[in-house]
Image (cartoon, rainbow, N blue to C red; front, side, top):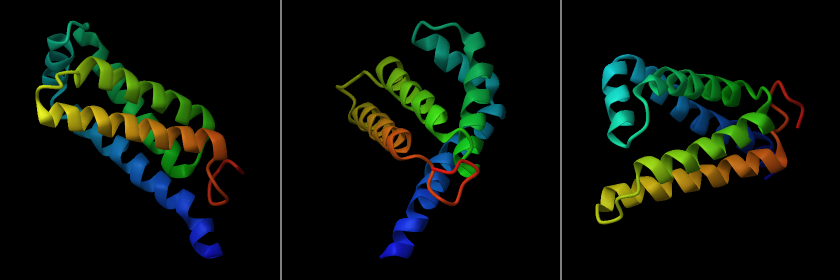
Length: 125
């Protein structure tokens, strides 16, 4: 049980960090599409590149456990912001699922904020 406890923060960081890293890298292949999606909710399309850079940096920070508490707060805010602005059509079941997914990930980020990166990280919990 102690080994599981020691490795679970690393596994959680890899899962969530990998999610954001892949999401950011994936957006590089279609920056115009990302900008169009951002514009479709009334925000300026130039936010595509900052969002891409943020997702990649957040993913990498989590994976290696660098500045985890700060990254976690920023990640939680990002997830709540994107849920509210991009997944607010509750008549569409998929959008409701995406909204709840974002809030769930925000909750995981708050756990990282509260408990740190764990032992296997650049940060030392």
